[in-house]
Length: 221
Length: 309
Image (cartoon, rainbow over all chains, first blue to last red; front, side, top):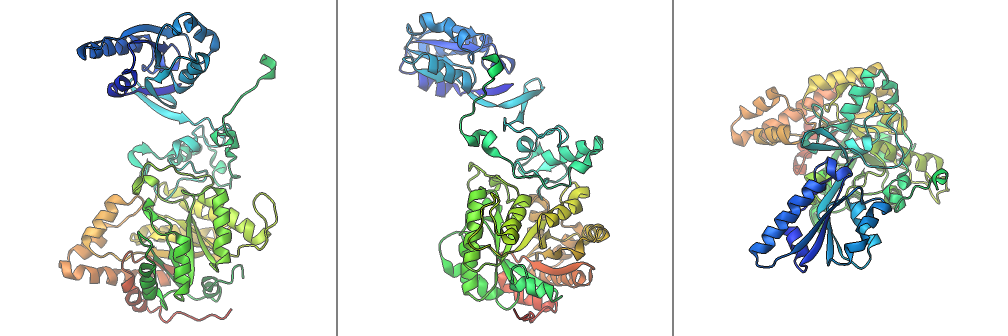
């Protein structure tokens, strides 16, 4: 899923400062699962803002809404009848949802209520960890199902580097060395022959470096 | 000869080689490099110039190499893949070769987290293994990796680094082999203090005949004090200083610890000279270049051989 963290309330307060009538918009997709942008978080954020503004003597009207997804046009249309009755939309969806919302409602300012994080997994309740950078050229079949691009702090293809000690990365003792994980797994799978080969230079053009990416599925259009 | 560098000639002639390193200054003052180079001169076959080591911003390695060369010392350019993509790496290889630099060390580079700009974006477009391959492709095939022909191939004696003390141990020799196959002519190791582990590493390397195919230069760093030893052991990832070594220095009074550090370093070099498959030493006297003559001379490695082109 796409993960995220709430922006500090002070930052949000500063963003909504000019307005007294806004929408707080959540999303039932990834951000609901990682508990940062679902309907419950919409309610909590709206209440917090109302109370804080009341304390300042500057009341704010807030309409609360949680869309099925903010990254699909049909769900955004739900908001069309009333968006322009408001001065701004504070979205707590991921960066993709926030942008799509801004793209569809062109005259209403859209504000980000969360910081979008990474493509990750729930390791345990309350703890998420990155697993994929969406580089567009998956090599997991060669690396024991563990991604060197994501799990190695240097994204190297022939690791581990000289900074790997006791299974930990040189960056922090709290970070597992991705290449130690890869080697442990290759050994368990009896696939160490995948290790000792020089790999071609990675084509980053399928990653972000090729510019904004697009997928077109002719069979679905 | 692949590059015709002095280091390559000394090694090819079968001499036990000596390299050292100069860390460029945290500023634009060329005199800092020139002063260090003066201590190095006559004591080594080539001198590494580090590339923003530990991600602390310093004068560029390329500029440092030119200054070292002007001082009459053969430079060895260190190049990390942390800060440059393949375009910049190729360009700097061409520039370095054009300025007469003939030795190259291909490195990953410490993560930027350790430096003064921990918020910097890192590059790691290709890794150090692939940089070796890139340099070899340009040198031997006279083409860019894209296949386009070069107007003058950069002739480098290509080196790599290995850390026999990092984990997991079982891939350490395999990784040296991979670097050799990628095109490395020589290797400089991480600072060795744990001779037992290093002996085991060399034994494993010899079993595969690697010492006959790549010139192995053993890395040593004299310890200035017991405090420095403890700090390095604790703070530098992949450094392994056994307690016995620290104790030997700690047992000395403070004012004699530096001399003990040098004595241990010389002992180590003498031991390495006798080790099968070791082709030379890389003496990293960090901010202690003035002691190089004492260490290298003390190990009986002076004067340096003069091998004709």
